[in-house]
Amino acid sequence: MADAPLLEVRSLVKQFGGRRVVDDVSFTLARGETLGLVGESGSGKSTTARCVLRMLEADGGSVLFDGEDVLALRREPLRRLRRRMQVVFQDPHGSLNRRSSVEQILTAPLAAHGLGDRAARAARVAELLELVGLGGGYAQRRPRELSGGQAQRVAIARALALEPEFVVLDEAVSALDVSVRAQVLNLLTQLQRELGLTYLFISHDLAIVRYMAHQVAVMRHGRVVEAQPRTRLFEQPRHEYTRSLMDAIPVADPDLEQARILAARE
Image (cartoon, rainbow, N blue to C red; front, top):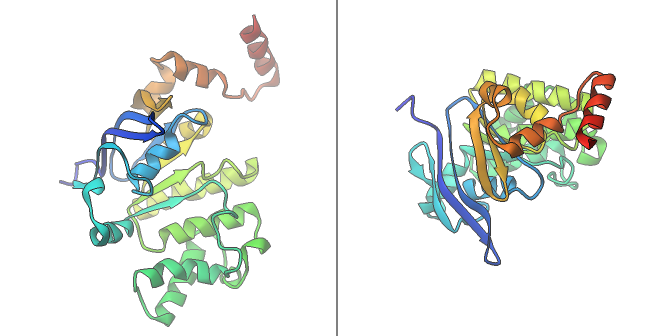
């Protein structure tokens, strides 16, 4: 059904050493929308995403992608599904092979799935670089020759190479300078609009989530403590932990920010 959610996570559980790092997590994500998964470091956000993508094996629950249980898929069906689900990580340079050229990095997923001949792959590389705002001159560069923002644009291009519907953005802008961060966020918004992408946007920063997300789920100690549409959550947060995260959002006016800090200390 066209109006059915693209992603449904039901009672997801992941344990390490007997401790539940992801504890009965459930949420849904509509097609073409962004769910912001927010919380402090160690809250279980990234582990949840890795279980959704089957990068980690969950210990319980279900993950339905377009009605299909991801956790039940065997090797070949899972491989086919991976074309539709991609991820962009936090560290752009760490996620790119330093010994490969940008062209080789972008060609690798196409080759892995047997898509196109050499000429078709080269054309796709040019298209992807244009899509993320980099010219064809970047194709022969190595990651060490790229700035952080440029490297993350290459990582985004690689994620888009197989024309996925769903992209996990795992702290994808947190390692970037503030000015570059804004540019990459605008790029992601533009790509979502043009390509109809669905995002799971993981961040510890509620200010960025407020800009990017349609829905917000707040995680603490492996559990979702609050989930609401963005506007409602920021206007009427229900959980004490959500309010504490909001109190940590910097205020643009330095006098107001100083007053808030002093009030918090009293």
